[in-house]
Figure (cartoon, rainbow, N blue to C red):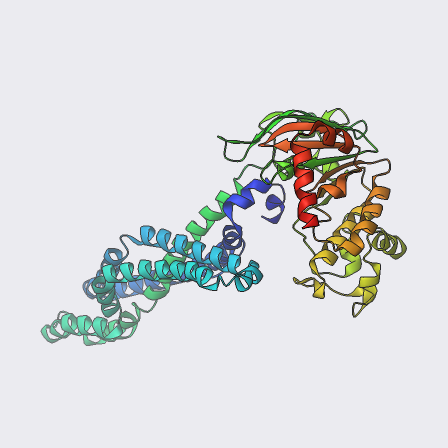
Length: 481
């Protein structure tokens, strides 16, 4: 399952939500474990015990065996009535459980935002609504089955069997139709017949729940991964071409349309434009987190869809807005893309990213284990740590999505210099909102509404007095203010 998750399109995770993944990886797997390790054993053991017991009693006296079997049979009939709509109720409960999982994960992941903006009531409200739905689903089921369920439990108790055996056996013994010595087996073995029924019922329920869990797991495993090329190609160089590229998240509205651009090796290409213009979408298409819906993206003359995923991703260093740190040492976090790098290279990359001094101040330096909160690192420091990753990996293609957005002014210039060094001989694609950070780029592609509005260098774009020039003046005026 983990391997399959690793080859699914990134868009699936955004659409499905982390709660669905959590349910499949924990709840559904636990149900499958219960089915295989416990429920089947209980079901087989219970059925075997009842079959052996009834066979023995039938060999003693078939009439009394029939009487003894009536009570468990009536109990099973009442249970069947109680569980006649079990599948529908379990489906509703499973859906409610999925909502609970999703809201819990969202609340935990966004706890900082929730507390900062006082959104605890709204976030908790969604969780409480999900719990209320689960409670209502259970209440409806219990209300529907309370009588038949109570009757089945009443019939499953030993006194019910004892009453039936005595009611039928005593007259037969008194009339001579049944030897007195044949009655005790029914009082001993017969009374115990209902005992395996509850485990059998639990096993049956486990079988149903396991079947539903298997359906959920199968739905995950049946999700189509991004297809691997039938005739793989290896790129001849690292020249990037966007050839009339279009892409839609929902299949109806294009996020980008007819984008054409060329990024030469050893140059920096900056993608700029208003929010929602499609900059990050393009950055996601290049490593094939999604497949284009129109046109083609080529690296070294090879369509990215024809390049094996391992080869494609190993040729890129990715630094996105959302920083992801591993629960591991600082050293291992930096050399994710180059596991064989020695500590000297790790330190050199950290120095180039202006994060070495910060690491040295951590409790165990480069050996400090980072938790989910980054071991106290600030947002800018966490971002610089991922920049160190990119520098160390030394991949020929570098994608920086707002890589300097969280940096303070004191370190921003130094990091820009490090990134300039990193760009030597490499193809660099930079997505930026702060135009002054990319004014020295070899090429600036201005996007507007998912389309290319302008292309050129900073001075030329300013002279054209188009969208880029208006954005530049607006940011300068904002900075002056």
